[in-house]
Length: 80
Figure 1 (tube, rainbow, N blue to C red):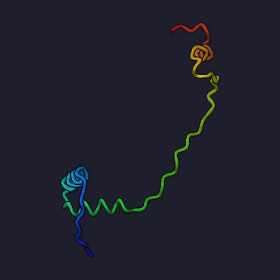
Figure 2 (figure 1 turned 135 degrees about the vertical axis):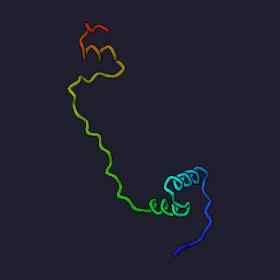
Figure 3 (figure 1 turned 60 degrees about the horizontal axis):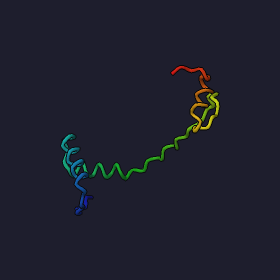
Figure 4 (figure 1 turned 120 degrees about the vertical axis):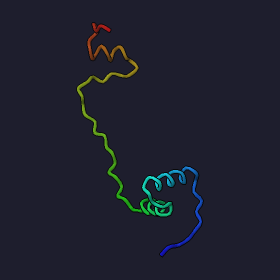
């Protein structure tokens, strides 16, 4: 079954759909239906990205004490 309706597309959406239909050699109608159908598919939500911290063995020095931080890393006689 097919339903005829009027839809107002934003200019950028129309341009991308028109370009995609030319690239694939398909009609605008086929491309629009395929794109809408893909957008309506329920996809599983991805697992949340979790950052797992690891102790690198570096000394903890307040960031406002830059000189103390570099002294702790390389010693007070560093050359640079």
